[in-house]
Length: 254
Image (tube, rainbow, N blue to C red; front, side, top):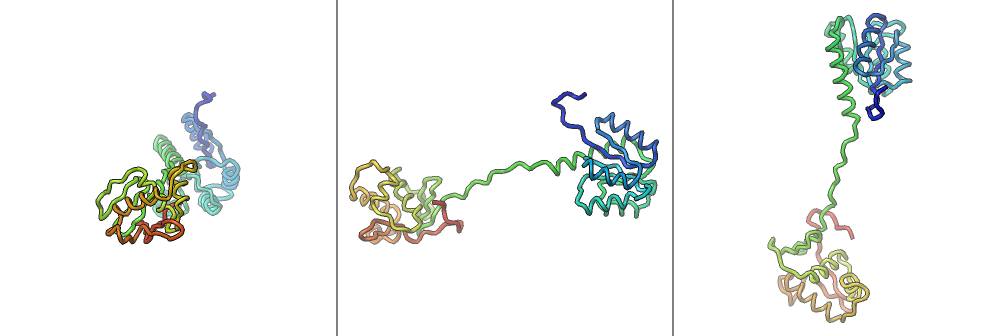
């Protein structure tokens, strides 16, 4: 018995009506640590493929009751994608092409080299396992929260204000007020709302505090701070940012 931590044995179904070839394949595949099942006609091979869900099938072409090409075609039509290596005494190019076009993984002509066949079995199972293995999920970073305001760009992730491509120094609180207005997406915010968002509900300030920060932001953002175009006063309410445009065409998340 294999140790409990060993990976499960791969299951191989051999469909071959020649007892000598079938027995030889069984012994050598078992020596390679495969779980081997045998079928000696096409109908039995088709039934066992459906029931056992093998990891690979070795399929002779000239079989009683149902030939190998018919078995192969039926399995593919039913959606079974296990790798199938076709064995055939007919080595003609058209037979090989027919097998591959029907969905065979490989085509081996008889008489065959046992070492070569085992190598093809290993390769086919390895390729199939790689196709079935779940691909690692590469996390997609969320879009950067950035807004263009005239010649200025506010990068909320980097906490950076640039005007005409040049970075502009801001205090942490100045940027917090600007970010609060940016996230409002053009909605007017009252001075009380800005207080709550930036300083928290327990801070006791005056409306003049917000007005002072707005003046400082205008001095850094506006072409003419005396005639603001972007940080707009909404009389009786507070302030809002005008003409916001996401650089990548996507609005930032609130």
